[in-house]
Image (cartoon, rainbow, N blue to C red; front, side):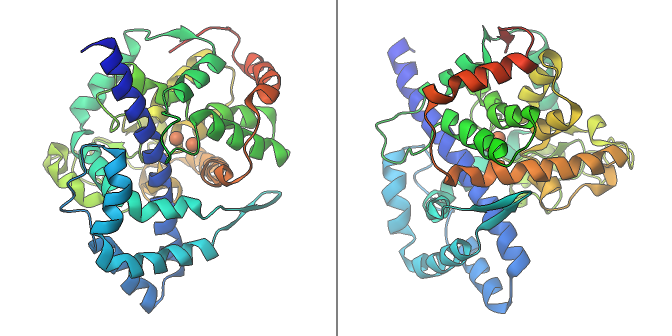
Length: 363
Ligand SMILES: [Fe+2]
Ligand SMILES: [Fe+2]
């Protein structure tokens, strides 16, 4: 494959990766809201919405142009139901942070029905391929080589450069999301270490440009490997295609683990959270709360849905509160104003230096 060809594909997929992560978060937020607020009518709407689409999607090749139009047309029959769900979500999105309220931009939810089949396709692949065998190999790969050596700031910029700015669907780059999360944390008077977590929590997505096999081993919700895939994992039905789902040990509730063993003993599915956690743990002075936020921020079945409590120890219950506190900023800060990157760069360069002793970090 030529360099120019590679660049085009990666730029394009980088954009899809961005959309994927935002839409995954939107799906999670919507699902959770509906669960908490459901009544008889809500339940009916929710079921209609889930069943209305996804199966015969011919757009799974990742063509964003055809996706942005095609889904809306194909789903014409259920548009009213979807619109109803979207409107409900819009009304409900005022998010309480420790020191204030974040008003959530409902634009996030407009993308929901548009990207739903893409999200389903993504999760089908992720759930089928995140096996014990893959996860063991991914960790061996991680530990046996250095993919790049660069500053944290350069890595953030590199990630953002791979998004196609000419695409009308792209509204937010990775560095925008990083700065918005960090600035929302800062504005609420949270400590500097947490501001840095906001800045770097998604930096592990840079893995996508090194040796990932696709998007499925970089983004999306995470879940434990080596024990039962619980119903609280989004699109749980797609685990049917994962060999571990019928494994005599891995398919049991405890699997290879002991009750109360602690999440640090549990292998989570490989992606940008695990990758960035190991980098931050090995090369920064960030505290355990910060590391937990980085490691578990995509572990929605745990921090939002309440699953896997039986694997937790006392420390995990402490960390759960930290991760939930961080999640509000991660999920909803992107509706706040956009910041000037150049303007904020000096502040964040100093912040990075405070916690990463070496200027150049090994990725
Ligand atoms: Fe993330
Ligand atoms: Fe994020």
